[in-house]
Image (cartoon, rainbow, N blue to C red; front, top):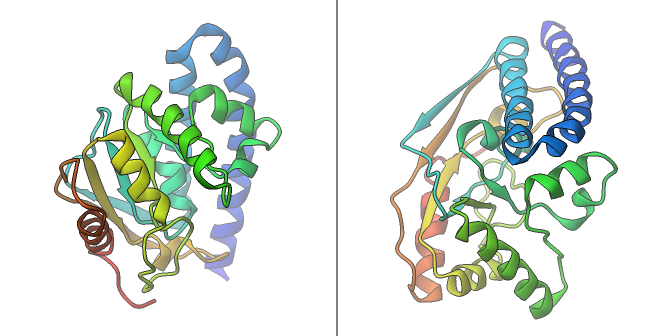
Length: 229
């Protein structure tokens, strides 16, 4: 019962704060990029505070997350990492699926902040559009955060990387920083559990590797914390 009550308190506090944060993005955007960036980071940090004090979830980061124009390839076990990363990096660029960017309010805020739209099952044309958008952000020194498995993955599963990751890696010609995350043990479920989430930053991988090699190295690195659910 205590776990359920803590989750209810979390959902009320976090989503109420999310509404306030989305509304704050409108005047922040009118003031410039820095105020908007601070508004998004504030939302991410509010989520971290709610997770820590209402759910009892601690976060440990092993290694240093980059703040320059590289590709950050991360494991994706829950919504936790998607929400938490703006609190950990200076100005990351996410790769949300198209339907999220079409949501009223939140979608506008995400597009204005800067995100690469992912059109699934749209082939080479969509990939070219993604690369062009990502290249522009990277040229400004912003790290690109992608989930190379393509979607959330239950704890303990190690699906192959989506083919689009290798294409983005090749066409952008940027180094990759893999990140393993084990959030699914605690955060994936409706009734979240207390405990510690670890983010382990892997060694930087140089650009220009053959597809089989980059996929193998990234797959191994992002699954370094992978344990059966």
